[in-house]
Length: 279
Picture 1 (cartoon, rainbow, N blue to C red):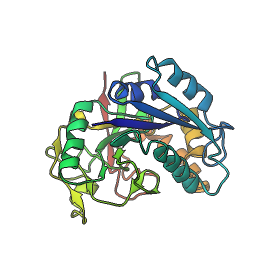
Picture 2: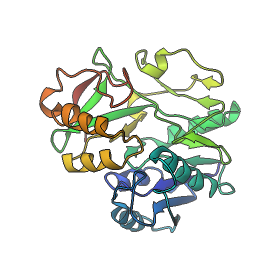
Picture 3: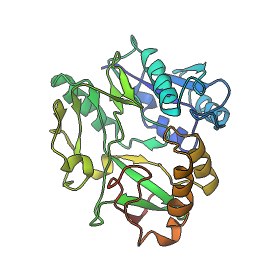
Picture 4: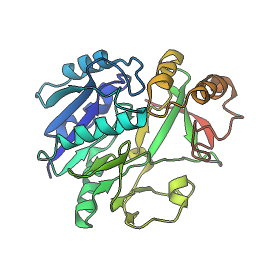
């Protein structure tokens, strides 16, 4: 099985840890970046730092760096979709599967992903999603707030496919239409996407453990970095984003025990928070 990947070089927070998790398993990595160092909304991002860090962890020369204009074609969601599709299309002849793991996401077990891709092959699937645990706020070097279900048990979300076949057409960020694998965490019966009935083409027959889920450093950053994220990410919604930052995320360090329904734009997706310690 030939694997390749693409990386969007804008957010350096976990970039070494994210790419190192699968670096040895892929033949090529396309690194897509904006020539002007701007994000999808036109705000400045840390692309220079991200590119420097990537070049420092590429001893085998697997990375192909591709610049472009990814900030001024249309709205932020359209700019994001265009950048991702261009990166994906550039790997059309390079692999059987293309990984599209964002740089704030870490896959702890590549072997189980390989098994999932083999399962997808055997069942004629084109897309593979993966459950993620969301880190919401960092309290200390090892202590974090993590999103949980209403009862405090583990909660997992599926923000989009992390692996697709070359030639797939994306339609919303990294999402695409077609038959897909949605692995389910053993014992999970509360996550929003699992509670819903399966849709046509959805395969839920592959099981994984909680410690094999992706860690998504969604908002577990410094206030300055989160503020920059709010200004530049593809879901920017003007004053609503600023209200969320100041009224929900910023005070969560002190109010998390009482806060509920914390997702910035999707009701019910992040029911509550719990404190965890990570190595």
